Length: 524
Image (tube, rainbow, N blue to C red; front, top):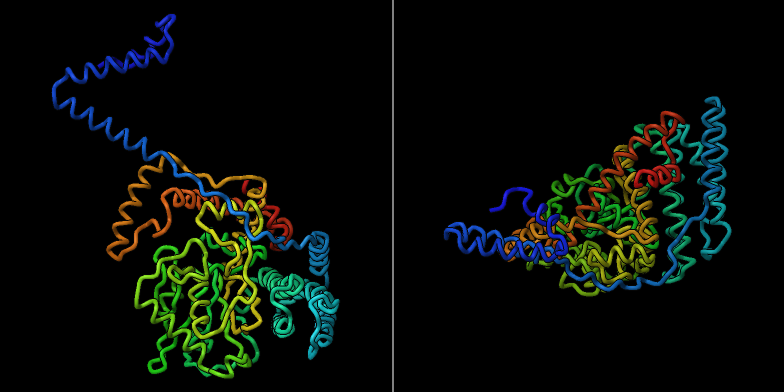
């Protein structure tokens, strides 16, 4: 065997010979020495060369799928930077008021909100009515004063609940496929949520983590108590996980939201046992007890219930319970893999929203009256690489705007809410970069061992078990997801520090528009 440095010296000494020719000549000499060496040494060298060859073959990435054009719609953009800056200025001014001045200012703004709501109560206005603009403006300005009046938080939340209820009732008569209706519902309900949570963060930890409606939507289905809330069979839990991929699911939509997961609740009429039917990327459709579901990391959980006055419910008041029973039976009868393509029309594989929609479809009721859409080219490209093939589908966040459902309750706490907003800001900033052509990178040198691991996971899947790489996900996609998570974690730590410095300097938590700017800097 040549001594270290021999090859490089010979390359320098070749004169007219090219480096490539020297390399070939050296390779032949090495092969000659290998075959003249003792047998055990030859076998070792052959084994090493074989492993190198296999590693080189496994390094070859699979061809990327052709990018699908997406839904072809126009993503919603607030485009109201001046308004957000004015609201932040009002917050700074409100913080300088005396305690009586803060109370007086809040009461005046709260009265304006109720007047605006009184104006739309009992009406059937079109989504383009200017009365809704007045409601939106009044509520945003009231939120500013609510953020400096912790003792009046209950009054503010009652107004917020009234706004949500009236907005949903107004949307019941709007055509679900109308762009104007979709945008108005989003502005009223998502805007209301954004304002409420800005107040919660400014008051943290002084707010109640449980938001309830004053009058619960009736249901004839079996029920049980969960964390102070009466839950009925057929109720829908819409939640947000703590992973960066959960944030991508929540924000990766023409109407960015706050939820990444949907589950259906079944309550046994005899034992009141609560079962949660859901689909996970790692294992497909499964049934879990409520305690196990709540033990998972959840940044928020919202409870939705089918409206009692729907024609289908008048015919069959137990429709939600029957839908939950169908989902429970199907999930126990066979293994249903996770559907990465997001094809809600094919029940063979099911993603989380599909578990709920297919169960209700079996009872003749179609949820997601307005399908979710993904149109932005950069986001579409990323999701295509991750396995998505359907860009008009059913997203968890959009279920909040379905007029067939009523809001029942939502659990959130200050720590989870702060992480939720940070993750949203990072994803929003990264999606801006995606629209400028950024790719989902991965470490190619890890592809061979990841493919070996994937082969092991395939064997586990055949035996009915799960492995670290989800069924239906390729090794390359798994590496991309890991790199995505790694970069997100780095950005989150930077953003936490920047947000803490902002709060120390300004005296208040950064509003979302400020947090987004900090996130843009954190991902650089």
